[in-house]
Image (spheres, rainbow over the protein chains, first blue to last red):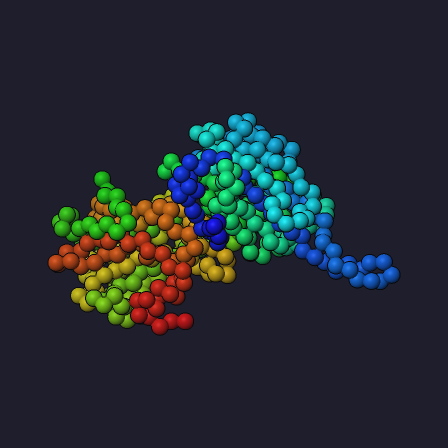
Length: 200
Length: 193
């Protein structure tokens, strides 16, 4: 049974799950339904077409992105150390379950990486006039890849209207173990590179 | 060299430091800010309580709107609205020799202002600490770092000074509460909204 977290909560990952090394970090979201005027004035409900992108930033002890390649996202699917791998871009966010997944091999994470920040932003949010007020049921979950067991889940329930990027969570080192921090903060970064620039 | 305490630890203050009367209690914290988030405003407050753990009067709740107790032996030096910069974010000055005899313990708390409406909690606060400095020579006597114990809480009782056999001791409490400053006030016997 997965542990459900609320915003601000921090929880042990490796301490309470001995032998845990390979993680699947699953992120999901659904566009809200809007009523559109269809053909001949009929109204129909439709989901907006919003392209969310999940990314991971490998940060050092000072919270800095020291190597641009340590931004793992849709155009750079693997960190140089190959500890963090993005499984691929999902353009619509339709369907149940994880929309995008990021694989993390904790044993391969270099010693100078202290936290892996998980973020989601909206692709071309400015030109499409989209923000996270148009997204519902966003979540992050961490699964043990060895046995597919879901370890923690965090449902983001705040109102993120006007925010174009979400700092979802971080997996970080603490006293020789890895922990998970449910952050859940919205930011105004319009592009993943702009978001990453805040950590340089 | 200051003594670093762990949660639950109690240490002598006046016994091991003869002649100590005036202390500065410094509280500090850092917040994790994101460009879309609200500002953080953390407040230090003090409850000067009797043997039953209750305040004797409203004046014994020392905070930004009531910066000192009745006889001026406990003084809050002022509100810091941002928590920026190194060192103590807020300080409380105490003249131990003048603390009224009916005060048995002096509790130090950190609370988040407007935590609920701003969607904030101690999960976004890091490096919180309390330290006690001898005002006469600026020597740090005791330090208690709060670590990672808090997440969904909006108020933390950091520690308390208390009388024991005619001396003052310090107890590193480190207990978190979810209902903010209002909840702490009720616990210490104040009926405020």
